[in-house]
Picture 1 (cartoon, rainbow, N blue to C red):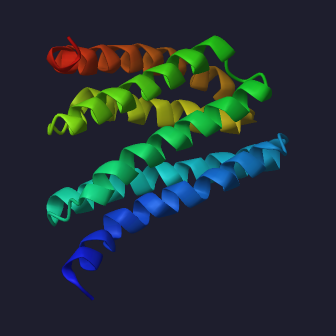
Picture 2: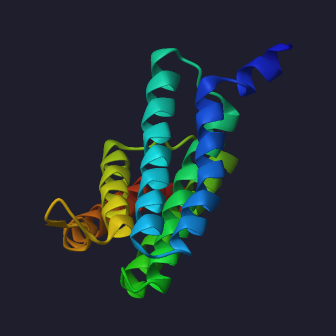
Length: 185
């Protein structure tokens, strides 16, 4: 195995690829919106979210950060969140306008990172962006579950987390714009 192949075939990149492969499973499960489909969607989404935590931890701990990983990890996160939110709109579990705002922010930040990359700069994920993803993940797990389990109404809990996630999403998006304003103007 040559050096370039060894750099791209590492555990963090495999975990990001697994996260991408879990997206269709989440979507398929949400096509069956009863308790079973909802529970399985939440389980698959939760597993995908855990792969994000693990790949980041492993990549930093063992210094196996690659160019492919810098592209694949945020792409997998954005696709996972966006696809799940869009499916939840079709089930009337999340307001469409909130999804539009969050997806627009994700696309804008991806664009900003692309502009920075062309200029030779790498914009690392901020701590605020990581908190945003955690709150989005808790939100989406709860909204996928939707039903009451153990006397907890997961839809209500998910909606509470959604508002916090929305604030963090907008705040972290503003931070990225501030960082890159010199590249844009």
